[in-house]
Length: 148
Image 1 (cartoon, one colour):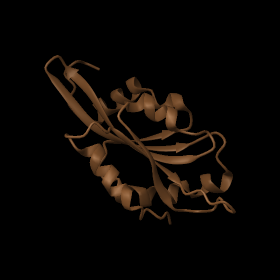
Image 2: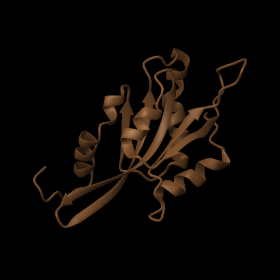
Image 3: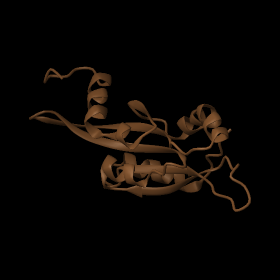
């Protein structure tokens, strides 16, 4: 089981969800211990206001991380939508034992980061390009009036 007891986690989650906040993403990483990399405790390591491009820059190839992001997009000239995504990041340099625990730990993360439209499994930073994610959000959202 992942330890999702970081007191900042719920605060950061609510901040990303708030219409009154500019914060549109948060990043959870595993706690780093000096003598061991076996910690299953997740900590809020960063938050930001720069969308998916800023989030991509915060991801490290050596880490497994979780992110939560608010995506704003237009469906047509008259409307804008905001949807939330859960990102499960497994960098190319992530250790095998950490990778093995991700599916179990993702269930624990979903207990805290509860409301999202789609889950994005990302192995490369290009997996977090905004346009393909918006296409997936439109499909998940039902009606699309612009034919996309």
